Image 1 (cartoon, rainbow, N blue to C red):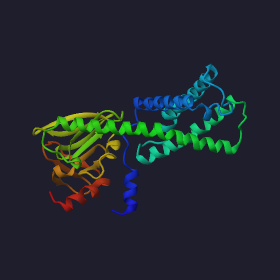
Image 2: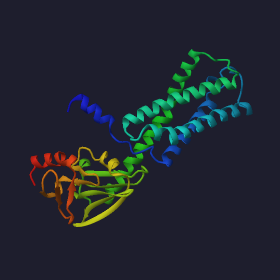
Image 3: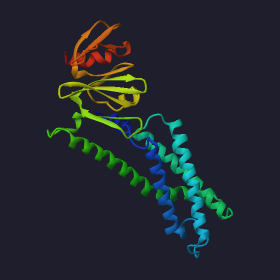
Image 4: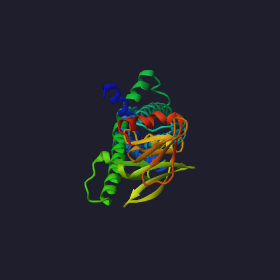
Length: 289
């Protein structure tokens, strides 16, 4: 794989967190709690640098409260309104742009609030750029902390799943995890046990093998979003309503206009749309069924 392709694939990896209300409120709450603590602990370099002799008093606490309230309001509007409107997918690349834009918004709002509290005594471009720089440096700690927490939580969920499975050792590449729209619910299974995915209204039915029997599990998501999570696996989209595991294809019947697949253990024939014929036939040509 070339360096360019490797870089593209790295940035296109889906991000399962910061997609539901719980994660967003946690992000907003933790970030603003840290910001309030920072202003309280380092007040000579924050809200009160025009009066470094001032001690902690009710006026300072009100000022910190104003900063915090403004930032909570802006982050709430940003996370629940602007982010869903701008970015439909959540990948490493969109997360990076999302955090950069948030940085600029918070830096600008802090500069404006600071000058409003200080009667616009520091209303200069250089001061504004300094605020952007300082807010960026301050955000490093809470953003890094919350991202580490989300990654640790995701890893813990994976470990808990593996501990519930057979004691037989499983390699990471043998496991496929499908994440629901809420960013919390997920279904993990060995790749070889997964038969196919079928779109059913606002859900996707996951047909899989459990002790030799075909089982069905529903997960709230669109087929397109799940398709983005299964790149570089044996699963391929074959129809607007189906994704099949190519290792379980037993028979291909018909021509390019009416192609149908017979899936091992599954009684129903699966249609193949004309736009997906080549994508399905290429791996089968390399490994005939």
